Amino acid sequence: MRTYFKVRGDRAEEATGEVVREQPLTLYINGQRFLTLLCSPMKLEALIVGYLWMEKVIEGLADVQQVDVSPVDGRADVTLTRPVTLPTERILTSGCGGGITFRIDHRLFPRLSSRRRVRPEALAERMKDLFTAAVHYKASRGIHGAALAEPDGLLVVAEDVGRHNAVDKVKGEALLRGIPTEDRILLSTGRISSEMLLKAARMGVPIVASRTSPTEMAVALAEQLNVTVCGYVRPDGLNLYTGEGLLLTEPATARG
Amino acid sequence: MRTYFKVRGDRAEEATGEVVREQPLTLYINGQRFLTLLCSPMKLEALIVGYLWMEKVIEGLADVQQVDVSPVDGRADVTLTRPVTLPTERILTSGCGGGITFRIDHRLFPRLSSRRRVRPEALAERMKDLFTAAVHYKASRGIHGAALAEPDGLLVVAEDVGRHNAVDKVKGEALLRGIPTEDRILLSTGRISSEMLLKAARMGVPIVASRTSPTEMAVALAEQLNVTVCGYVRPDGLNLYTGEGLLLTEPATARG
Image (cartoon, rainbow over all chains, first blue to last red; front, side, top):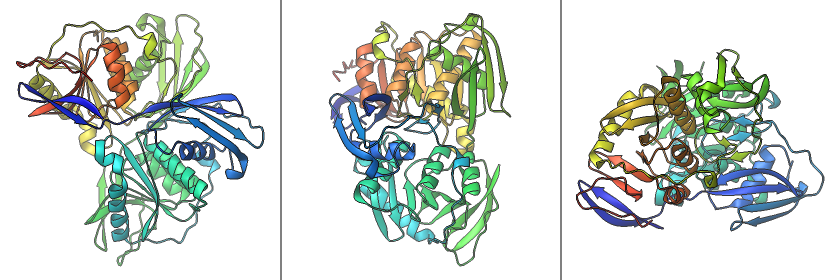
């Protein structure tokens, strides 16, 4: 909580409210400094595990011997069960939160082949669930929520000041709880960037839905990887940018 | 422009609209590969110059001999007038767009001392100007705008899928056009993250205003660096998070 001033006209009134928190978290892998994430201080173990999985530093929980997180020091020490060579290629992404990927390259991703079909109303209901579950979003805005879902309910929800961090947390928590992500739905409160699309494909997720819009590159990648992309998901409708994952009485074939 | 489907109920109708564009741009400095930015393909020279300035790779235009941008190849070759050692420290930021900073560290920033005072109504009017000028934002949303302003008008406006890129473009264009940024106002359509706050301080900007909210860390840094932070700037008011840069008949002293 923080005290600030609400200014109306020439008057300033004191007010108190939650302001979005972000903190640096430096990862050490097997004692070697890897990088520093800026993130919201919730579900940090899930963030770390999910991030390392996304970057292919680990293939699963079996590779992780121990994760020691010290939020106060802004430091996390990860001990793996085997030595690793950490990726060094730097890509500055445009997306909220996250911002670096090291190895994500769409050529490294197999094209998905899923028969999953979802009704638009189910996506709208799950999006509503996500906004209900996103308690930090409601408290201070300026934070992003992401969820792994089945058509009839949410499985994992995570929030972060960084949109990509939120997705990494979703994957990390799914790993920690033993929940498969393949053939499921990924929901985001924010824009679908190319990096988020690649993260979804990496998770085996064939349907990505957002309350806002995808980027053009995300749509282009989705076409290549056979991922369905829906934007502006609302109770009365949505936009379908590409893919065949929607169940419609009048079928649409997005031609991109 | 892209064709997509508007789904309402069970019906899908074809629609055409602009979708936010992002593209990778790999920077080579004096022939050495530096990093890859994901950005919106507008004002790329300004982005490059601004980014290099923010990262202290250059001190000004005098250090830049040539910038060759090939948007089609996603490549930019920058020739400097002197050899440089490129920064390698990686920090993954939470902010939209941008996402890596290499050397930005608040201890490296001098505390600003500005007597600039602005009326809240002037900030609201300039914010309105920014939304008027942000043509890409209006076309497709999901894009961020930033502007350098005086109380009575905008000086530089830039847009990018990445919020930090937009600020780098503002600085870069200011450098290219010979416009000093010191003691001026920085406006953003999106959240003020710690990185954006540091970029503002680096530009000598004592007042940062956003249509949405700052993060807690941004406010804490602003207190240290004596930067005024205003959020939720609207015609009828705004929130003052810290600083003494507002001109009020009933003065407020933000105590943080």
